[in-house]
Image: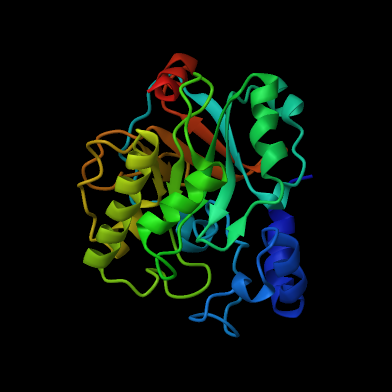
Length: 281
């Protein structure tokens, strides 16, 4: 069953069942109070920890800004998952042509995915190239602190040829204002803090997942990350669209939130050898 409907039901029920959801999603050993930051406690529509890659894209017109980016002829199918999907049928996905997968590992410094082990090791076991992503909350702690939390909870990288660098999921704040209360310059500084610490810890630049409309609004369409950080663009309008400033091409494209088996489906801009090359570094 497509899990996107489950997400919507959870979102609508969060006001009544927030406490139960927080217990279900909170990492082991973290107090219930840590599931919500002081800045949004009592007002958030969703409990802290319930965000996922692309949570704001559909609500903001599919994330698109024009239609100019041109993909390579060959694209390699991938998926991204979070705790909403639970135990994933990786064999079915492999048989359908999926060859790489990202799993939500962490959010802020208060959440770890309770299904991470199955969702991270499962694709590896069937032959996929796998990796982890971190949902950023720039209003809670610094980028460097969140990068450390991510690496310490499954978001690292290994030179085994089967693990892609971790991804920073930076998009609309599902718990408050779109840009997390930060100015454009402060947002750029926050992202640099995360990128620099992730590089320091792993030797790799993280992938940056975003949507052009959010990036333009919240960073002023800053171009400085394009030289080193691979771009994962979100656009559900049929093409990757216009890319954020600086990036001449995208590495990955999240093209739908309603694909088979898991909902979120993605395309890598190139054949499997390009995926393997990014994994090897």
